[in-house]
Length: 78
Image (cartoon, one colour):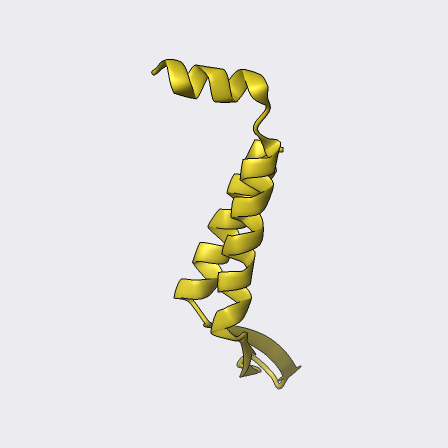
């Protein structure tokens, strides 16, 4: 459960820092004799800043709820 919380937290951090993701894909349109005819298509993915912040909060909650009594005792001993 703690690992899941950390993974969600890291994904939330990543989405907070990078709110726009652009991907360029080259697609072959046709072939006429030797040269290939290709066109680049640009795909953009946008998400809001609060999406990443919400994922960070959810990841933190999952991480804290994933701790059991044994983990708490080990933390207090240190």
